[in-house]
Length: 127
Image (cartoon, rainbow, N blue to C red; front, side):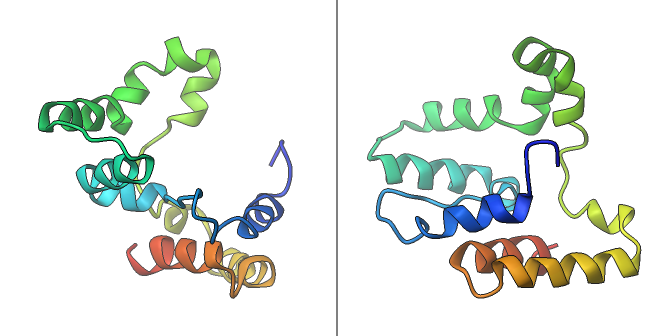
């Protein structure tokens, strides 16, 4: 990608994954259960939130809400960042050969790491 190697970026974060002040969150888990995700994030930071605040955060941080406001928040790049909002769309874009190559590179860079295990589970197992 334009800003560097995705796998090297994730690998560099793995050394911090076990730190008590680091919380790993995936898009897939937030998409699956946004209320639980926001509760977990609030708990991690030690915030107590009312049910009304929780619902407001969930609503305002939904993909649909962020996509709707993407021109204001991200300018012309908003259309690129906020495309579909689903999970596992790669299945529609990758050929079987490309998927095998991606799995191999994923294993080479992230296999056995805490970050890799979480991503692999969230992306591949729940998809």
